[in-house]
Length: 336
Ligand SMILES: Cc1cc2nc3c(=O)[nH]c(=O)nc-3n(C[C@H](O)[C@H](O)[C@H](O)COP(=O)(O)OP(=O)(O)OC[C@H]3O[C@@H](n4cnc5c(N)ncnc54)[C@H](O)[C@@H]3O)c2cc1C
Image: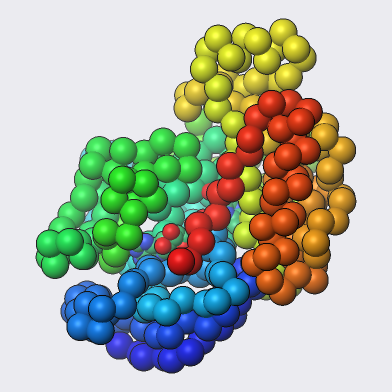
């Protein structure tokens, strides 16, 4: 285990905000994980499991506790019914997993190409894009249960996945440290119909090869065009969650001309559309710019404090509420 002290959270997260964390422990074996939590308990310090920091925001005062980062990497595979079972260590960079699967002609996660982050964080908010979610292919995860101080396997059903949600970021928040994830993937092609923007890209570029590799290339190109590269531009990706409404609310919204998508996960109103319609795309708030290419994304152009983020968030959400009556919810998690 690597022990680091007084590390700026801004250097560990893609939004690049946050003061110093007292300890940052990088765990390299399952035993390290138990030791890391034991260390925190011994000194009565709070803990926070961190991956790549692409969906996490730090506070100005930092964190007087222990951040634990999974550094266990590796992908192994074995045959499964009609496919392949991939076991991925939680410290593996997520996009390496997608690349590995696509190179083997395995479908199921090609739509999740280029989502920044580590594999261990992928089930936490049930990452999703282009019509796929990790819940579609995840079989189980191995965790360290900090409440019972044991290693456990949690099956997909135990995780209670829904849109950007699992027990890991709700009812059991901070209880489990993800050591590895296991996916079941199949040979073949992405299920049709394709997500609207993907279909549009494929048609416009005369692409009729729907193999995982080809879809990965298409998704990567679409994302490169509209989403900030976290290595160059500070953001936490989508800063707001999409809005989900009941069937009766959906009818009301449609009557008022709001576009509602009726998907397998419910009636969705795209929050990016709400932000655009409120006239906020491209505008700057306290050092944060609402992306003009993907209005759900807040880019940190010059802000250095959480205070600025809080002000920007309050102004944007109030403007959307005034126009549409929806309070937008923040997607990224905060270290506190
Ligand atoms: C440019 C950009 C584009 C993005 N696009 C998408 C997208 O298309 N779809 C999407 O769903 N998300 C997207 N995101 C958000 C982000 O990439 C995902 O949420 C990703 O899974 C975060 O991984 P991470 O390792 O950075 O997690 P972190 O931000 O480090 O952590 C996120 C959460 O997971 C928990 N966590 C991390 N590791 C562990 C562990 N080992 N055990 C237990 N809990 C853990 C943390 O405590 C925290 O609650 C985007 C972000 C950016 C910056």
